[in-house]
Every structure is written in structure tokens, then in C-alpha cells.
Image (cartoon, rainbow over all chains, first blue to last red; front, side):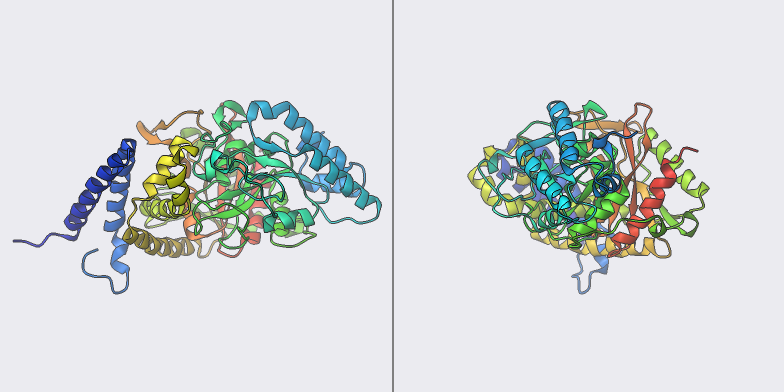
Length: 63
Length: 454
């Protein structure tokens, strides 16, 4: 099985985080947070995949 | 002749020093404007008329006794209502702080009072400074003096509206993503965010501590200069003299175009380009500069700002969530979901952007760009269409200012002109870190050149 690319890894992780966050928000009676969390997820993915992450000293292989 | 309540501090100070205007006269002029206009604009939460009159009389008595403190002697100003003034409520425009009374002056306030300033009142804001329109306030929205159907900008909206409407000669605001410069641009005044860490934020309710700045809103760059010096601890601040200003022919400005001018209202673009043309016509050299990772600014800002704000508010959000306005509460809740690893990544991104702004400034005196991509939005608008695409008002308002809170560079908004509908438009100048005073010398020249009718 092929290794996931760093982008795919981040995408999977952010998707899982979003699922959990939306579930938690609904559980806490805050369903109106969902669109904001979706926007935050897009922003987080952009943050994690920004090319300057490569410049971090001693960064592990996954950006 | 300029009415008393609309004079610059520099001009007022000259009259007070000459005893042709009393401190009480100046205070009464501002209180009269507050009585006339605050009902319409909602700029003040707390008005300290009696206390201001008493302090004005004391200031006049000092003058009679031969004690002149300097150009801020007897000058009435206001404070954004998250800045502490001893014995007066600090509300942060939130029901959460009902009953909270400050027990000491914030250091910047103490210094201004020592320099002679008189506090007229505490100004309305976006609740806890967490917003760009000053609409989400437990005390109702601030309205723009140029068009009361529109936002005054935010979060220091009450401060900007007060200065623009003659309800005080200056005001103190705070700036975490643009909250001094945005309302200054929207209301047609000068707004200065100093270098990060230059002025103490003690005695001021935090929004996001590593991004927060305190600074002045004023009518002129020369007035902002006075306030900056006093807030930094110079008890008798020096007036910015003509000889201090940088001659236009000795100025080089870097124009930030890619990203920064990509999403811009046509009227803002026209007024900004006209301002640049005036500066060039006066001999200022301009060239284009680039921030290579400008596209990452908003995401880096968001991952710093949200968790820092949420960390501060978490205990109160747990105990009294309904005490917040709904929109502010939701954003505070949102910040609680930002992961620690992403906050750390954003801190790395912040260093990248800091280096890029430093590099863009290399060989020039300041960077120049519009302050806000749009004119003051109608109150209640969540999105606006620009270039055929809808954009969130919040993102638009922050788009051109938040970078310099992230990097800590000093930035000032000066009036640049008006839209066809007579709404003010601001021009932003960004200086080298630690050189806020040099930035103001450049801004003073730009202010003069741009305001000259060609």
C-alpha cells in the first residue's frame, strides 16, 4: 500500500478533527458553530500545508 | 474658522497656553457635542461630565498659578471602555462586566493624565474588542458620524466616532487585528498602532495578548505624536515641528500591490491611487514591494488570535455564556477547538511573515497600502460583493491591517480622501519595528501632501 502524501495526511487529520469538533459542538448545544468550524478547518488545512512549514528546523517528515 | 471642538490638539494647546481658551471652555465644547450627538452615534458608554469639569477647573487653576504641564494640559480625551480609569466602570461593552469598577488607572492613562489630559468618558466598542464593526455591544451599535446607517468600524468604533464628531480631541484605542486603524479609516481620523511592546497594555482587558497593542486615535498625525510620547512616559511631550517632518523628496515608499490590492472596492482603489499620485507628484519615490506569503496572513492570524482570546475567556464562557453577545460568544467557543499544534505552527508562520515585512521595508522608509479595502459597511451587513464575489465583512475589514499586528511593525492610518458618497477612506503607512516616531514623521508629510488640493 502506497504511503499517503503529506497533503493527504493533513487532509485526513483535519477531516477527522472537524467531525469530532462538530459532534462535540452539537453535544454541547452549539450546532450554530458548524459553519464556523468548517471555515476553521479550511484555514487549518491551509496552515498545515503552507510551504514555509518546510523551513521549520528539525521538523519531522510530515509537513 | 475651525470651531473649538474641532481644533487639533496642537492648535488647542497653543490657545490654552496663551490663555485665550480655558481648559473649561474646551471641556464644555466637547461635552456640548456629546450632549448633541451621542444619542445619534452611541459613541460613549460612560460620560464623566462632572469629573471632567472639575479636572478642567483644576487645570485652569494650575495655569493661573504658573504651572503649565505641556501641550496636553487641559485637553479633553476619551478612552475605549476596556482601558481602566480609576473609580470608573470598565465594561468592555459586555454584560459580563456589569458592576466592575477599575481600582487604578492603566499606566498609559496615568501618564496621559500626568501630562494634563482630562478624561471625558469611556467609549463604546465591539464587545471585548472581538470584532471589526462595533455592532456587537451590550450597549448597542456605534454609528458612523459620516452616515449613521453605517458602521464606525471597530473594534475601537466609539473612540473613532468621538474624535471625528468633536466629542473630545483624541481617544485611546486598542488594536489586535486593526482595531485602531480600521475605525480611524472608517471615520476619517488618524489611528496609530505603535510597535509591538512599545506601550504597556497593563490595566487593559486583553483580547489576544501577543497581538494586542494600545494606541491613539486623533485628528492629525501631530496630535497622535503628542499622545504617543505622553503614553510612553514623556510628561511634557514635544510638538512635532515642521523641521521634524521628512521632506517628500527624501522619502521612498514601498507599495504593497499583490494580494493587498487584489480585493478592493473601486472607490478605495481610486482614492488610494490618487493619494499615491499626489505623493509622487510631491517628489516621493515609490516602488512596488511584495510579501511572498501574504496569502497565509489570515490563516496565521486566525490560529494565533482565536486560541489566545478563548484561553482568556474560557472560565467566563463556562460560567456565564449568556452574558456575551451571541456572535462574540460563538467566536470565543470556536477558538477552543484550535489545536495546540496549529497554534505552534502559526507562531512559525508569524516569524516567516515578520522576516518578509522586514525584507519589504529594506531600502525604503515605509510601506504604503489602503487601510481597509471597503468604505464603512452598512450596519448589519455580514457579506459584501467585491469583484462579483461575496466576501465576509469581517475578513474584508481585517485583510490589510492584521499582518502588522502579527509582525509587530508600527502602522498608522491617515485620511486619504472620500468616496463619491462622502465616506472617508484611509491610507496606511507601515514603518520599521522600533521606529514608530520616524513613521509618524513620514506620515505627517504624507498627511500634508495628500490633504493639499492640487
